[in-house]
Length: 127
Image (cartoon, rainbow, N blue to C red):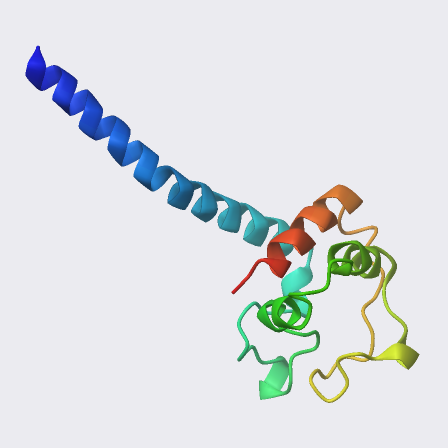
């Protein structure tokens, strides 16, 4: 009886320790899948050294660069979600000389606003 209790205690402890990691991995996988099916990776990469077609600068900024740029901006999630849904103006290029793209097209047909919000919030938490 004592050994069965110890095994259950060890199993419960292991689950508590690994659960946050497993949840984070599952969330990462879900967000990558959402980005893939929504066409985000056509223009964006995740890592800072992401390249565009033919080795050019990426079309859109790498997501880790976005996370770094907006890490202290409390309004970033709302504003970036609006940009994902409605696109950006080529006249207000805030990634000039860092990307090869001129503007982000509206993506309302590719992703639901709630999903865009979740994706943006995930991007902003990237290290």
